Length: 277
Image (cartoon, rainbow, N blue to C red):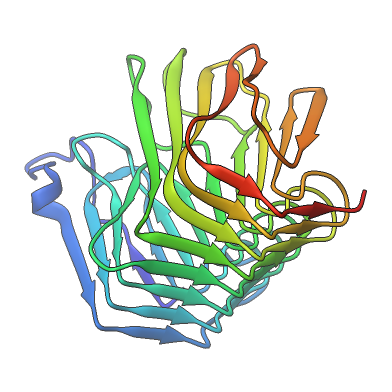
């Protein structure tokens, strides 16, 4: 990628491990037409997961980058402790492409959207997550359960992205994690607009997959809208693949309780999505 930000590893001898001591600020920048070859990772900006640090990206554009592997645009990884996270403020991530998954942006750990609205649009992924790909945190090992809140608020729009599964967003909680047993991840759709995304299989707006006995996963659709997304397979709006069973629906009104993975609709709007499978 064009930039790799590792900051410092937690507990490194002789160094402060507070987020303030490891803050990276990127403002009014343009990252475009970068290329990661072979099985490369991330087309543009990559932050390290096993570190303490806060990356703040403001009024910047990440566009037309390509990676043969995964994550065409931004790969943001953080521990999810002590406010260690990645912040986007008024950024545009668009027309990036990944040869596998995560066309626009990939998040592991915690993130936030503040200030001016950021947009993730017109990105492509060959498999999962055309716009956004969220994956289980797997960095520094924790010794006790954690609660991670991942908030998609009204400072973000996700639209016009394409993939096989999860045109707007893929939420993948199938992989291994360094979070402690019985940790909880709250994915809150709280104002974000997810619209006009397209997939050739399942989950035009959101594709959720889960098979992890260590974690409790809550997808809470509180506000915002999931609309006018299209799927050739199932779940024009939302497709939930949980363990060995699958549930797809365009208007998810009831609570889906698959042991430790729950989806709740409480105030958000899901409408005019289409599936032809």
